[in-house]
Length: 625
Image (cartoon, rainbow, N blue to C red):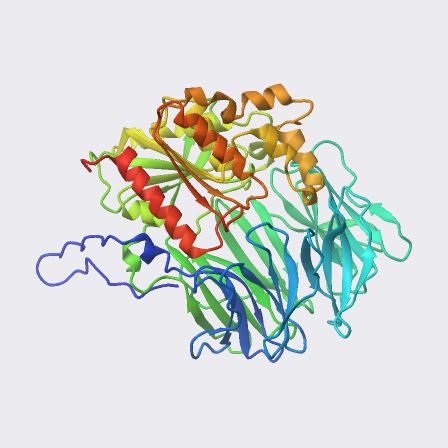
């Protein structure tokens, strides 16, 4: 996904030439960027399988491991996104897909001749792949087919493709990994968003054993079993601000620290035979990755790669080959293959549209500022390349979803499009964001639309101090929970932001919390404790719901909504738009009949992002600019 860049400003004999002006690009050009989803290597290790939206909707593709030739398209869906699960040992393929963004995903089998069968045809149920068995004779999946609020675990035999129930969830648990000998299943029990336990279910004795007895708020979660089946890896923040990894010995019941850092460890798992351990650390909105040779406990040295996060590492069962992605804030992901024996790394598919000069893109910069109460808030700053003192550019705050998400230094076509169009973008990781310690994460509990919104308001002081932002031209934009923050900003601080862009945002907490999908299970209860319960905290939820206070909104608003959204129902956006119109305030509404909670169709993203740019040009930047 890295395009060949043109070098500018090279020192030569005579005067130093000035850098060429940044070329302006259309949203169509930015959206020719390819997005990816997952990857796998074929049993003979000659072919790489991946999903991408290069034809407009996510489909399956194959490309030789050696990188020769062009990707071969295997599926041709024009409606529903198709996401790779992986190859079966005989070369057949599993993939996942839902219907129009309803999030009720099913598991499909693609035969070598292209024929497709739905292995999980039950209606109104969700199915989640949970890994191949260690002996590769079956695979596991989770489903709420029996109980809409709880996921059971099934084993699907590859010879007969008939499922068998191996764990009937009594409720309150999220199933995790299954041990190599099939005896144990790791379970997560979520009490709150900051407090959880790990259990070990014995399929022989039916005993369900608590492994993480603790006091106070400690976030424990199950990882994978080691290949020998003797230990279970557990993520925990016990006694520490950040999550680290412990190895629980099943025979002795003792836990030992395996990996620890000054940031959250976001991933820690072993290759099939245990030779390599893949360790990921969430270091200040970037992913630091190490592939550790367990024989020496030393990281292997990868060849030189472009700057960015290395993610999606997939190592073959033979542990001789792997695939991974490299992604950064100013470079979309590139899919690579790597041969451990030869040390050769090969770019397979690049995401960046070759029409775009990579030098015209802008890298995000991590900044920090003090909020209203002295708490330090991190944010990612993107500024146009021609931004300088006195420029007085318009700016837009970008607020992530969640609550509890984190904006990271990864590529966003919308951010690059806006920056390329002359907007400063500041992505605020307000209190309540993950990745900055459990104290920061819990700092917005029961204070949503208040303390976290004040963090966003305070960022305006930072932007004003840059010298190149017009304080009167700062807007706010976000998706999902970020959409709520947008609406809250226009409602509860009506003089602070010049415009708002709400994408799939919550307007009515009472309805949203009551209508959460049943399959969220204990996660619903955790959100009730963090945000408020619609039965016992109805007054507080009413007070923080923008829908009931729309009379305060006096700045232009753009609302974008998917009709099939199961999380934020379309009626919320319908009502917020109707109410704001009554104020005589400019309000624009863009809906998509074939999207859910987020975009899976490229043509819809183009339509939405074009609407965002036109709205901001009209109401924020102004005709004189």
